[in-house]
Length: 314
Image (cartoon, rainbow, N blue to C red; front, side, top):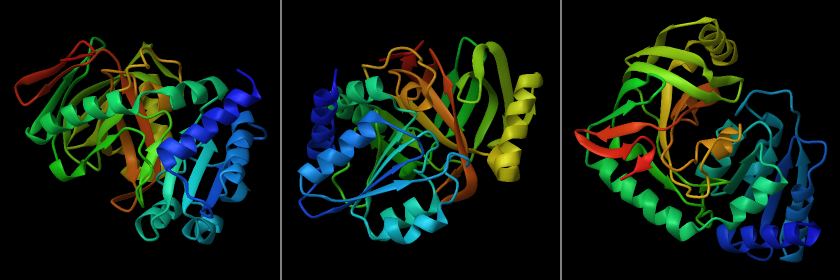
């Protein structure tokens, strides 16, 4: 699909998901040298009467690391749209702009042109219905138990007031949505015990690597091989001991996402998958890094109730 298709998709994003109003201040952020749909979004903002500011940031940063030079810019914005390879979703400046000043944030991490077009076409209605169904069940239980073919055997305590449903609605003040969207998340969390076997991590871990981490009271206390050790060392370099603590548990709810493509922003939305993150979560858990890993074909119990069987949501 050519430039016209991209512009139509950008307009749909602004109309349906963001509900952009004429005169609103929109900051479009990128850490890329060039991006076709970055330009399409900027054009769509201007066409719809938005007050556009383009911002380029460095690629030499960790996921969700601070952006102090953008604090004032973000806080004066109505909408922040990030087309980046390193997330800004949980950066302190983004959080302040959302929580204190009501900025709406759309984050597209590692999204390319094809994924952008696919994501905008996803059904908000279907994803919303499924997400709310899972969230209702999750709020009724005390403990989540996760098992995977690779060897995960993990128990996670439920903290009911941290549960959220992401289905692409970025129209409310202070809202944060990823594109693509489609997950139920619980964050921040702090208690998890057992074995976590990673199917995919953006820093080069795959199922064939058979990486396993041992968690006690929510913290990584052991691992099984050299690649697992390197993952732990990466976390510590980026965020110290705090980065070894579990911070999020999520469930993928996007029916259009069926198998991994090697990008966390997509793969954590795979229908019936589980993702777990380590590190920080805004002001609720301060850390310089927020790092997700993906679990595929999980079997999940909410207390004793089976809710996902080998990746199929029941």
